[in-house]
Length: 447
Image (cartoon, rainbow, N blue to C red; front, side, top):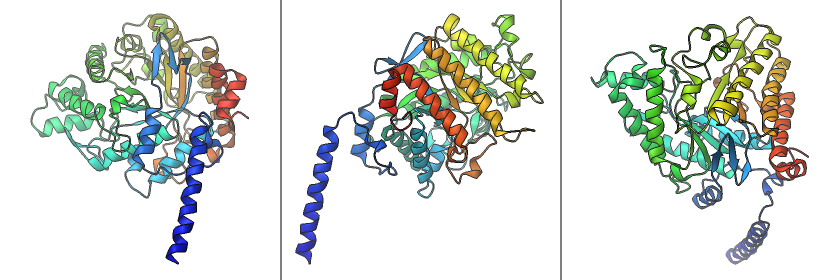
């Protein structure tokens, strides 16, 4: 019996070797379209090979480039990837999200690379990290690489979720070194700025236990984002926030010159903007920019591309669908014009969404508004403009109701949204490769 089993094993290994030989001889054939993707195996050599084979995304003037061609992003937000990659029983949702995204032709995911002092915290206290959670982030980066997805990793939160700037202020206050209990001291307190720099250096120089690459050397990461939606309401002049952005951007670039960097702003125009731009600010943001100043912030030399968010139902409460559509079009177009002109940098719509919790919500409204965003990006791409892409907020895997926030979309439950996303993927691929090339590259998506 033992000899018989050994003979069978011998034949199985021989067959596996033949399959491997055929696989590597095929070169550019993408077998992910031929067989279903398996959950991430955790094999270090496989993950390292996938990461090492990728070129870096770079900026040339007002456009992003990848492998010598203009690169236009159809992407998505799933902020929760690291959180769910911690526990074995929730990791399959991460794999499922990547598979679903790739099946729609999505190429970039924006997600959190922070969790400060809360449940499953990455940073337990200033300069002290949970290796278990760091390995979860390693897994997210490695699995993204295996699926051919790039990541925009956000480094801090203006909001309280996952710790946010409030947690840094609390740490400083508890240690008796904080200047004030104001959350805005995150931006001006020297001790807190030092806390944040320790975190930045630790993260950027982290060696992924699966790939063997330090994060700063991994092309899977498209860009770092300094903070999700930074605001400093105590200084409407914008000077405090501007100084913090300049300092932290320079610090990141002193450690990592390979990756792109963005601020993470929502796009509010501030004191240095002309009146016609200020008039574009929505609702209550018209007189109060919360310390942000889009053009000034985006001009920082170490910032490679500008970011814009847009939530018409939050910003224009009680507005009609037509009013929301007109605002979204005006808002995004104004910022793309900034990228084309004064900034000469790419502009990415890194968050956009419509909540199902708004009064009178209809899924068809989402389709209309999201198509408007996609049309602006596609139109700009066709003429070589500054609109670098758009990332919907947010996509979720099945069975994740606890992570839904009113904006979440489970693609399998929204066929019309899936079709819309696929269509945008194919349109942008056609700009990059031509119609025939897009069908070849994305295969089942654009067939």
